[in-house]
Length: 447
Image (cartoon, rainbow, N blue to C red; front, side):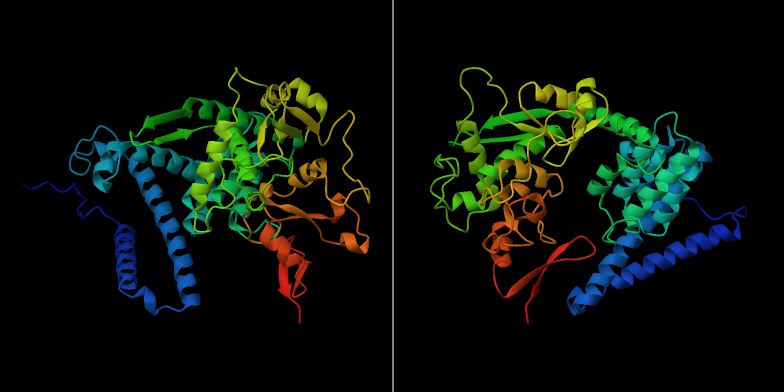
């Protein structure tokens, strides 16, 4: 059985020299990539390997940008309707799916993005074509800009787009490092901040509301009895609830907690075995933490939420339901969600119009309080040591400027969240913990 190859364009007398040149350049690039693929990776040194990886990623981005531009041009010229080239396809997306061996849905999405890049977002298109942006970063930028408030002028949208591109490429970040798509998505919510604070509030509210509605539609839970004493399942939940679940599991599976027979509040660990072997994987530990959480769920109806909501907007905005709020997990939610959670959870205002909780306790306590931990969680999502991704829930608060034994105060200015490993390292006389101008905390060997 044989299958017919998709129709391809043949060179005709009407083709321009530029058309022939473009085809020749792409063919040369193909040959160069194939030649590079013939080099054994094992023969590359560490620096060469890193350089080749980086250049390959840039090449992929440039190739994707070129493909989107070509697809957009094919759509504008209605190539799919040409019986000699398009085979009388039902649409450009259908023709591209057949020509490129992909799905019609993915091509329709790519065509929309290509049209927006060619007509509106020129800064993003140029950085993409130069290989400085990745496809997921491009989609974040365009999606955020498309949801700009109606009162935003084209100049404001263009300026905000340029700022996002600079952040994505690392030109406008404090550390000089590019923002990945996940971090860029958070920054995009406040892309109008440098231009107009009120406009930024409107834009953030629109993005959060749209994401919330989309997350509500996509939320599901599937459980299956495997018949061997275990259950399997999969789920998708909104960002808010995912962060709350991750925070609870982080507390339950903290390495420091597992190393103690009794938790700090006097309860004993039951499901999560503190004597589990070190070879136990992170996923297995998380699974045991989930089991412990399930065992402690209420059995007589729904009890009030025990979550504490740390809100970083003024109390009036919280009551009005306008703007956005930031939880102590580091995520932003709509003020409406914050109002809902505040009905059942503890409400701790960080910036407010009412009475606040004291954050600086001076020398009255040896250990930082729960309130101070909440304050530090506003600026730290993970361990403060550069490159460490252990969650804040695993961290202990270190007296970093002046130790307690040297009469250092127990306050926010003298507190730094460090995981157990880095906290031990901070007290090791062979290491020095320094704060760099970039904002990072790094360990250096003492000479």
